[in-house]
Image (cartoon, rainbow over all chains, first blue to last red):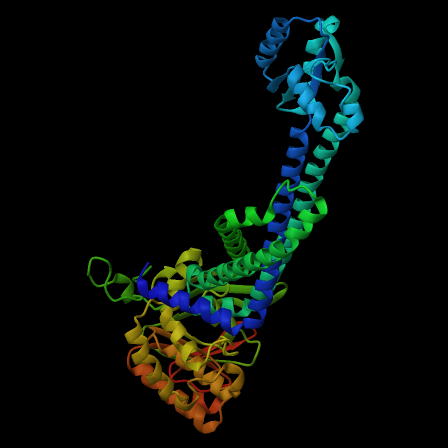
Length: 301
Length: 246
């Protein structure tokens, strides 16, 4: 393509954008909302995911052994566990460690003092984490064969709670994506309609251009440029708004939830360019695709 | 497609198509739903001719012109321009045909978001004209149609007559081989109309084939050119130095 054509087309696109500035502005705002919706829901899903992962990673099971079980036996069990595909980590807690954990527990000092190094009734135990907490049931089955050695399996007591926790996180994750998809679809439809409207108002114009001898390409390109402009401006605006929102909301969220499972501010800072470029890409793509789609039907003249 | 109308073909030899008529309508019919706009029209127009197409409104004049730039396709029959059947042009080839034709539309068809200068320049821009060409030709033609002072006005700021002259300027600016004018004097007063007709004559003398569709009896009678008269979708008379007969 000749440079003169490219320059001409660029100019046409920019001029069109400016001359239809109210419609362009409306389209840019709707696009901003679309991008914000996409970003907010994506980030929300990331937060949900991170939170549920952190909840999940805290789920473990503790198997306590009778004091008469030999140390070697426990260690051989630990090695056997380590070979299981579902097991993420095992940790052996001996009497000394059990005592130090005991001492950090939030209980009365008098109770604490009942256990000392010399008279330590606390059992030795294996703390087991699975990649997927649901698989802890398999680990529990593994210990079925060693029942005589075991004084207590925490899993048996917590089974229902763990299962419920797992179900809830799963549900929240799925619902999160479904709601996001619904909102993203709605906002994409709205932007499609807005761009269709801006192009519909110029349907006669397209027809005239064609009758005067413009090729489809020549007619279409200014619309593509306008579509891309909506995307570019909207992504700048939306990134800025997102920054503001996160900057002000993040401390509130942290103080409300107490734990910092997911530092939004940090996340935004680290991924600033990725977030911006993704929005830019998504915005330009949506803008251009909607413009092409909307202009297509009027080009048949 | 680029050698539409051209005197020489790709090999540099004289184009054989050059010898036949420029425009040939062969048994052309056009229906809009149940309404018959054209019925078995046969018409030949030679290169360099000046043809007046006359007849009452609804006679089919505008349909003939619309078919020529392939704004519409005939229901039946064939239309050839420079020996090529334009019904069989592919969608991609249409712009090349239209760039060789200048059309003055009855409803002007100006781009509302462009000023006078840009509207005229658009016809050059679509054919990849250089900036220099545009800067040179556009002001000249705008002056020729008497709109030098309105260069930066937008169509909605112009009167009907002025819009019509912009439409004429746009049709002329790329020096088309065929000029089609649909009621170009419809909104002009007597003097302006005569000026426009003089302009068309001048262009015709320079070698451009001109088809002028009009109601204006005086213009047709003073021109003493070929007159094709239409009525109810048919050609009812075709005289070489004709008069307005209806």
